[in-house]
Image 1 (cartoon, one colour):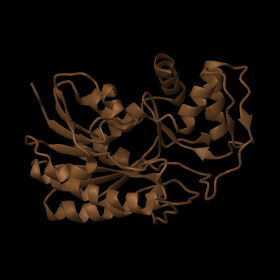
Image 2: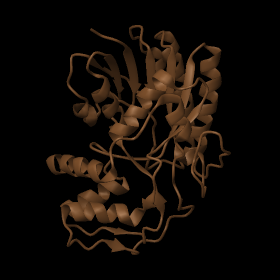
Image 3: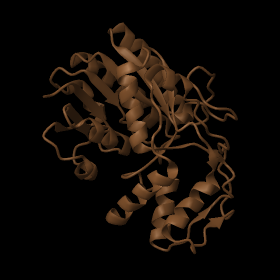
Length: 302
């Protein structure tokens, strides 16, 4: 028996796959992926998951059965093109197109994936009510997409939830993230040079992040912005040392061999109090447990 139908854009990404793994039993999912993507193989094989090949720029031309929730996670230029203003601006339009698709498919809820980059440089826990001052094109356009899609969705009678995601890790993560590059370097015994690692950081496991998405879709307050993270911080150096000790305690991490980036965020923590109160969400996976699962996945797929 199918309880609900979900549409997910950016369906080959780590968070989307975690959402599908949590929902695939008893729910029907329409997974929208870029045509010819090499990552389609990562999508769980299940009779309740239907892969729809469609570029994010063509969402207005997709026709899907009536559904309940649309999770919009697709975004071009998330790592290499963060300051490519034209690419980032295109994503704002694609977000509005995703809203149109939600309405066309008779969804009642639109959940959009924002980013901690919307906040800019802060030295306090991040919540959905505080002022923002993004310093990258990516952050500016994520913020713009959230604001415009809220107006767009509300004019169409859709519940609109925007989530600002902090740092997520887990199986299937992009190989260019710090966690992935650290794991890959140590597994292959290749040099891993990084900063001193004094940044205070909040990491959340992909399955927990997916659980938060599902919670806000069902229980989130219309029009609200929620920040998704674990709500706990440690020095970045400590995370790296935990990874090292799980793979090869004798590996020499090159701490201090790289300078901090321009506009380096030094404090990143989610204030998840409203998320907890409104939805009942509580992170379940510690970093120690999550990183073991992640390393296991990398060993199988390295």
